[in-house]
Amino acid sequence: MAKFAIYNYQFEKIIESTSDGQKIDFTDGVYKDPDVAFEHRQEIFGQLFPETATKELPFQFWNGAKYHIHRLILPPSHGLVAFRLSNKKRGHRTNEDLQKIEFDDFPCITIIIDNRPGIQRILIEQNQSVFKNIKTVARILQKVFNKQLMPNMLKIELYAQYPENAFWDVVKQHKEGFRKVTFHLPYLNLKRLSDTVDGYLTDARKAFDSALDFSFSAEKGMRLELDEKNKLQSALTKAVSLTGQPTSKDKPSIVLVTTGQHPSYIKIGKDAYVTTVIPEPTLKALTSDQLTIEGDSHWDALERKLDTINNSK
Image (cartoon, rainbow, N blue to C red; front, side):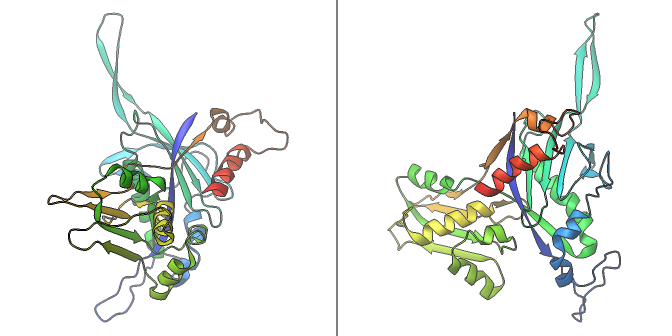
């Protein structure tokens, strides 16, 4: 079985203006207006993964000067993409003369993209023997995808989902309490996430057409009253954990500040992930000549697994 971290991705507009306020014409893109491009955001993103591709995608994965070989597991189909991403390393073996022989090794992980309407989710396999830090993989994907999206005035941000109880676990660990807490909730353009957020938070974001920052501070010498049963506190912690921790932006989704003369600043969700396990037979079914259920396509077993994630998150 393979364990995968669950990421959401959300689209943002790129709006560039000249000194007199005129928009720059992105001549290489299909859409010349960011609002129009945004309306077609999933369609544009889906065009990066043509169903005619059989071996690899029509672009490369670079991290600085390092090239990461990738191979499609199956041709993309109906918004689903699965490929392997390598991380080249130097390996060695010992021959019969007890001499060390070096060679290039290409260990890899599996990446699964679910770009079906309204889903916008990426699953990244966790395997520290390939990539020590899963954030490295998220940054590579985000950078490469954004380079491809830029001509159409779009970019994406990957958000790592983390458990809702991560916040309350930290609260329980610090008996001294906290003097301040800050919540950052990005503007949500993904309906399945915005639908989970309480109405008054959604209305507040719409009113300003922007992200929301909530900051709560205790009176001097006092500490905050944090309670899981409090409706506002519960709504905020649920909203930000479901949205996730952004990959590239410096602003963490929740920051707690402890009491005392030397306060600690605790970022919630750092290195904490919501994960799912995909059984080996489900992954093998992608390339197997023997399908488990008559009439199945190679994608069906994986699609059923993805649907269980969509129904629970």
